[in-house]
Length: 363
Image (cartoon, rainbow, N blue to C red; front, side, top):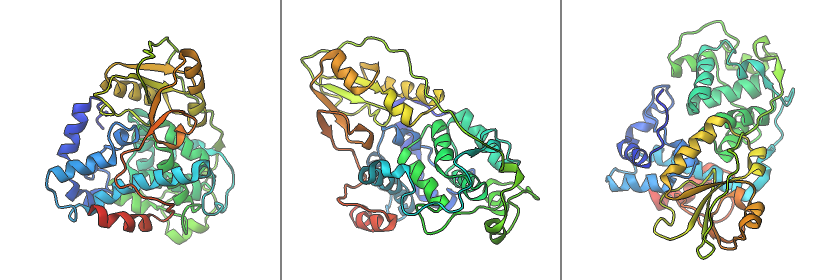
């Protein structure tokens, strides 16, 4: 798999080259017509609305690519839940996960040694390239929670740690959907299903069973050895920055690296990397390297390693501007609204109620 580029012009060209009409028919397959734009959406380089507007510019029929637009809406939907539920998304949201054996993770998953060839290959790809196909994420989550019977949170943190497109709302709530704590039932994947979508013919694995047998079987030996994780983020060394007190300071962070944000205004531009955030939601060194490269698209950006209150104290700044996000609630200053696909009011825990609300506005 090719590595993700970080130059903004390359990202825009990628958007302009996608085929949203073909997306629906092949997206679940290993080599499907997926866009691989998710890292740039999650890191706030582009928005769901930006991609949507690019489709409109190409005069593509929105009805013919409704499934693609719906997938953009899913990303906003998860974020809307985070906005409304805050830290509640860190716990079982709708109901307790059933049949929880432990709060660890299978060692074989971490080591890519489950003996399910497609799963092991994609875990290795996650470590190398910071990406995993969305369908495979469901398979892995099913093995971790419903087959190995671990609570979803530790495996979800493990996956988030390595994903370039790591969005805690999408990640945590999707894992809960698979585990049955954010859905009406657990999601199971068997070997036949994996073989179909990942072009394998593997037989005689612990997943080579009917769905009925998977639901009732004991924890297989292949995933029964569990371990704790000690995930840590290594942030860059703190270095001095230069602040002009006469102009506002724009705050960028792990979820906002938009090079077009107030680009024509004279401002201090600071990418803040807060230890309190990365202690709570740790990410890998490759993820940090990825965002630092993405930040190069922002002219005159400076890196500040430290917490928000310390930044205020160090430089006496009182004119901050930042984009709305659930992790920014401790910021003070002027908050800019995010560029949603379509802004809605109120709380939605059902995607299809949310989708029905916005569909008539955008399709």
